[in-house]
Amino acid sequence: MTRILQIRRGTSAQNDNFTGMAGEITMDTTNKTVRIHDGETLGGIALARADEVEAAAEESSFDINEVSADFWQTLFATYQTNTIHTKTTDLMLVANNVTFYDDSFNDLTELPLFARAILVCQDNDAGYVTGDETAAFGIGDYVSPAVYTYIGDYILHVRLFSGCQTFWVPHKTTGVKASLTPNKWKLKITVYY
Image (cartoon, rainbow, N blue to C red):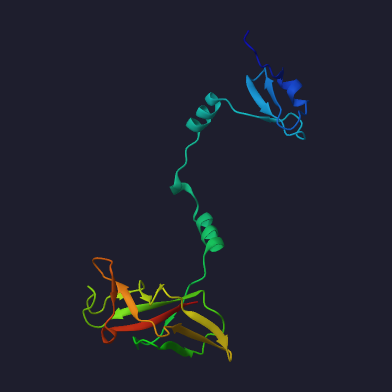
């Protein structure tokens, strides 16, 4: 024997005066649609039929050229991000067992958004040519070493620790780890604030 599920049903007027339980569905026999109830809203929430949605979509069209300039100005003013500034150290020689630091950020008195170290090729090495820059490098077992920043004596201090580890880069064309020739590379640190 086939089982049939039948939900509550009634005219629009009857549905308008009915508050169903949360999750209950009723049928509006006048408008040939269903209503979803939340246990609070009198009459529930009527769902549109597919033919009603298609008709509404055909009647309305959107032309972005008709949006007023005031709308765009308000939108951009509301969501405009602050300008990000950068400050970069002078180029420093790459050497092992050295702490790279720069205390010339004395005009910055708060921690930056982030800081990153970049190697600049001074003479062809590991597939790179003079002037190439890369932020993809490592020191010893560390990949992409983090730049250490802190506020002390009311100025920003910037450090990159290498310890007794050697610098390396992935070869430009093969990606294989390649030790640097120290005199062929220089390091700079850029602070974003």
